[in-house]
Length: 422
Image 1 (cartoon, rainbow, N blue to C red):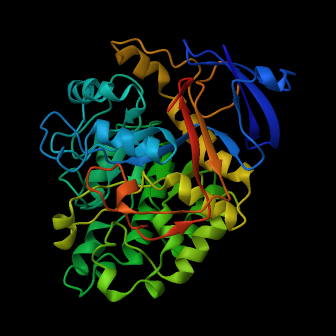
Image 2 (image 1 turned 60 degrees about the horizontal axis):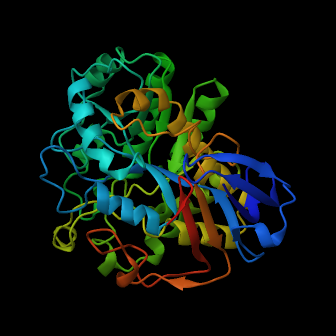
């Protein structure tokens, strides 16, 4: 047994606590005022540090699948290294691979590949025209229009018919309407080719489908002010929908990006205007947004120069959280959107993943909480220890970041995964 002492942040409180955990099982045994003398504490963190339950990212693209075609951009092991570098202990990998996981067999093949990441990476299944639910409970992702890959829908009718088979399932939506995208396909810039209207129209349709089929819905990498109004109205009707937001949509806007940098900042949906960014920050502060998710989407520098959409984000997660803290976002809120909500999402599917896990990895009650029985995953930040993002500090295989040159007000101090200091 080991004992750790630190100022701990949960959604309920920020207080100095002692945590007793088992290095063998990797599980937390006790949390609170354990009255262990300082001399007997194995890991002590002073008041300049802040400990959270292991943070999680519910939306990344690790790129690896059975085809191996995109592993040159990232793979499960390099994604894991970037995660650890950014203070993350688990992440959900999206299904838009060359061989997408859309049924039991293809999902299990990818799951077996991901085992090399020691259950720190978990998987979404894809929904495409004519797919059907798996025989066990997993999270699903649907692309309402073309993005990266071939797993998407071209019209609402086909999407509606397909989702009729997924009643009650957990479905995450990439909200960009294909008809709006087609109508703007010849515009001069990326953000004009993928306008706010595309997200707003798709949001309206996604909310309708979530309500119609009783889905547990999540809207990915949300970017616009207009769509938030539709979501608020839907929630008042009882629609079960949560929201992700990315660090890049909270930090950057078109008014502060030079034209020469727009291509390197290209992503789907695009970086928006200043008023959209401020609306997202307000929604996050007010508890309307449930997840800080990177949409980590690595491409090579050559691909980015040609206009491929996607930005990296795993390496800079911890630093960005310290920026939010410095902006006045309370630690209790960061515990909610970075640890507990991602943990809740992950833990709903634990039984299925345990069933598929041939290694029989013990994850206890799951992740995301500083409570007995949960994994001893800890993300420890130094909120007032500035660090500048440079290439040599990145662990993603593609070695670039939208935050290169940015100095965050704080940094990652230490990371524990399954009771092991990383």
